[in-house]
Image 1: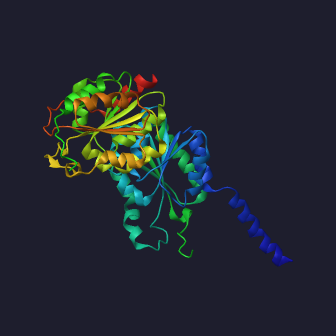
Image 2 (image 1 turned 90 degrees about the horizontal axis):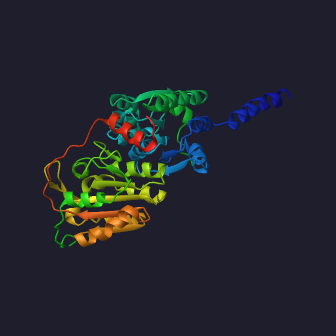
Image 3 (image 1 turned 60 degrees about the vertical axis):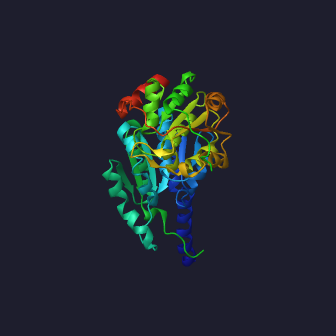
Length: 188
Length: 196
């Protein structure tokens, strides 16, 4: 009996946790700011967010062939009166660095949601150089960087970043720690 | 082989001709000579000159075209910049904006950095890539008669439209557009959206 009870407890906690994924908190922020264009490259961690954006009738989901295209797309969107967000992995930050000069110089808002690879328990050594340099590279060109290292912190961090991007007109990246996203599953 | 045709068109006259009938079309220009060509044709509040981020002019136009479906949006850029962002042709084709046209002023040179030959000089066919990506209308222009046919396509044809215009390699005189980013952002948005 006691054993069954002990078993039941974590089960129900897991259920409550599963009810709301951290990407749902990000989606709420995107909707609250009335974002119309979400440019993305594929990402396992953000997959539910990408799917939510594709399903949403008021959001144009724009798949990119490479991350830096999204910087141009969202600069053009801003000129045309629409705001948006760029969803990517830390491995794509290097591709964006030169292009980031456009919104930074023009003082255009830009919100980047970046899932980290190559930090917390990374198995693939080839992922380490870009990830370890991600924050420094962003800050070197003038991007404001916020971090969320637990699922509970993602929503408030993205909300804060969105205010700085869209209300203060700045280029802001939220780095979501690999601890939140989880390891890549190599045992498929 | 692709370059067997004689190239006689003058880049500045080509851009001036395309923009002559633009009406209220919105224009994004790629960095370097295409920006100078557009400025030489006459500055406009509907122009936005991109001064960095080589490869961004086409995505820039795409984002603008999607945000402003009721307006014609043009990206005018060079072959060097287009080669740097070929993947963006695929990205445009997936969105399929009917109001968007890309014009590549192709001198087959990196004219701003010493005149080195670009890949198009060796026959790389960017319009064929645009066609393969899924652009609705694609054309390559060598003559004034072909340019006259292409202008209505660029300004009114159902997009996405892609036109390469082959031009002579001689650089034209530099005519500098404004380069204060916040000022250009503000003037473009104030004119288009009536806000600051």
